[in-house]
Image (cartoon, rainbow, N blue to C red; front, side, top):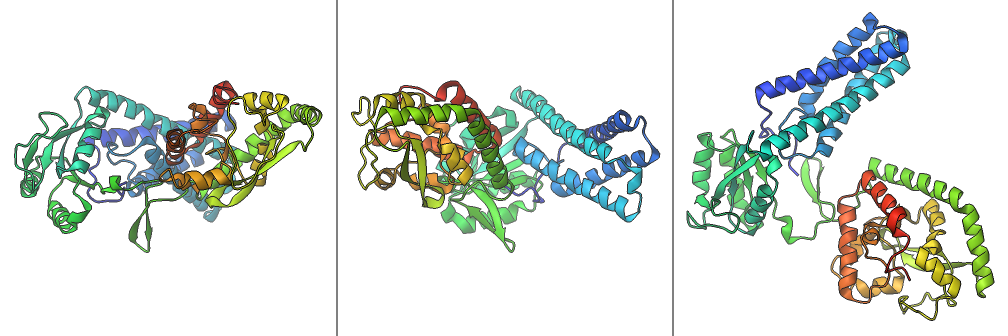
Length: 470
């Protein structure tokens, strides 16, 4: 992901940028007027002063965080994250200024909180609406920018494929530029997208202002070539982005980070760091506590049913791999007449004689999983995440499925993306386990609170039973 602070990023068109800034100012001041009028009945002079300072502060913070730069290559999530940072900085400065100047008694805390809540919400919605309108316009061929791709290998062709399949970006590829492929060579992605010249021709075109964006998609082996090209393009006005050749790797959480200014790329890491980790844990505690409260009478009835239907304990405890591959004990209502937890454990199959009659009902309805909400409260599991497998099965499949152990970069879950998409139950072939792992990787790469809520909703609607539940 390119840095937002790069000097190579081209801002919006001046007229649009000015309109955008004015619209931001209107939203901030309108939110203040509404908050003050609704709570205090009128706008005092102190509020007007705070509003004007906030508008000025947001403009300055916007320059630092680049929230007024081009959106063509950045997601709405990135934009809103930086908007939130700008709002927090401006809000903190206003509070500090009021405290230092001893004027804080002139402002209502309710008004201030309501103001910034409405302002941030309005600014975020504004950006969403503008993006929708711009994408619709770009999809019709308007408001486009030209794009040249440095390189003509597999990586460059993948870049072209993705750009061409996403017309809403408003990027219009003009062709490839490569020192090793003859001019005029047509590559797979479109007859009009051919090799237009070598890298020197690309630099000349950029210096003449003939291209807006350049994506450098050269192989990692061409380090010196990449350095020279970036140096030459620094003498142009084109926006330049380097596309690392990471397709050769299995990327889990590819993010830029740094150590004392030295850039690093996170290849394998957990998404639940810092604030995201705290949000995930809060989500787990709230959902688990609510689920246990609602299902407590049902769980007592199930416990009685297990005890009366067959000899043995109510709960079945089994060792499974948890976060970072550490062994945890997972609880379920016992559904079998045996309690296997050794080096070899046959998976449950349809018509399995080990399953009791009452246990078959529990497994068919997934009610045997309810005690795992206690595992969530203990911190051993999450409500949503890759389903945990018995230790014996982990040791078997980690040798057969590439990247299998990356599932354990997060806590195992009671439900997951694989389960709500039909990949639950017995994995009697390696292909089935591969599909489950692919869905787990998709979840880890794309995690968000919204995705968790979607999975929970899908579990309630269709995840308690299915062809794989036996």
